Length: 196
Image (tube, rainbow, N blue to C red):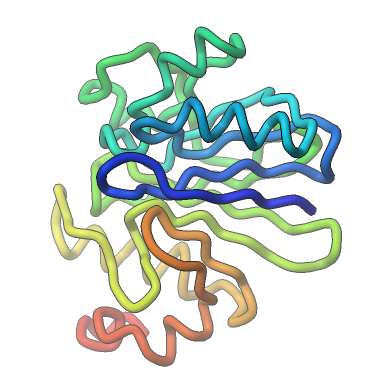
């Protein structure tokens, strides 16, 4: 599986391209501010065609280039309905459940806490691994601030992320990748809230 990630905009939000392999269709996740040029370069480098664009939540640092990318590639932004109101562009609902995009089965889990419409995106790789894109719900060594309540964020962590196997690779909305096992063992925000 091909995963291409890079930081975008002043807050360096991570944007990801996911594909079964180079030279095929891909899914674009979190098209943040100033992402359009980097996306175009990555698509050309890996000979990819974007067929879906997903957002982990509606903050501008994660969706700031969505309108430009929709215009360039003809794909709408898929965003959880609870975050659509705060988003100033057009979007279509990204609902819970498993969806097929670019030959990948991506499971969408509603994870309120950071925002009302935050989601986590999980998928199995063809090689047998597991990935979860957590947006600003979970970072390496930290968690996102809450627009909702700490209790909502804690519940999202406990029900959607901590049950995953330790070897699950976490691709967060900011900062480096990590694993569920590493966060379960060492993330002070998880142990402080009694979630781990």
